Amino acid sequence: MNESGTETILIALGANLPSPRFGPPRATLEAALAAIAAAGVRILRRSSWWESEPVPVSDQPWYVNGVAAVATDLEPVALLALLHRVEAEFGRTRGARNEARLLDLDLLAYGDRRREGPQPPLLPHPRLADRAFVLLPLAEVAPDWHHPVTGESVRQLTARLPPGQKIRRIPA
Image 1 (spheres, helix red, strand yellow):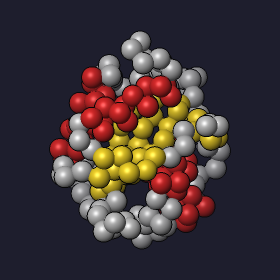
Image 2: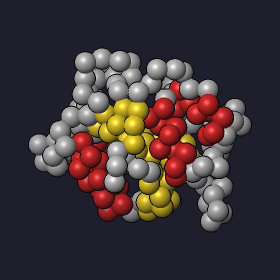
Image 3: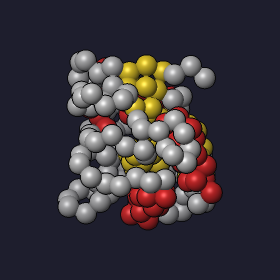
């Protein structure tokens, strides 16, 4: 629960290709946040934008990433469907894993809910604890957040990130 007594719902945003419609990745991410809000999801807080090297390392352009804390009456499956619909509206087509993309929206956590198995969404996101491009922005919007499975704080998770991830905050 967050300070307002509601579940902390966290989404990650990322892009590393320019959009023909919205322009550079940062502008695309701003437009994606607006589209999510227009669909009735309240954006409570959002992180700074961060630039990060692709994971795994490749010759792709660097990503722009951020995290938003949101509020919605949608259940996790419906929220993930909404995020996928926004991605599709922005021109994303799903192909190879870790490919360059116009827009990537991930449901990171939905309160303390856990969901494993073959059906999405997996909660919390199975790779969030290993990625600086998720944890550093997450720490900005939910500094008191704890991983629902391990109980570790975002600070503890950040301290044990695998080495070598290149990331920097983009000046406002």
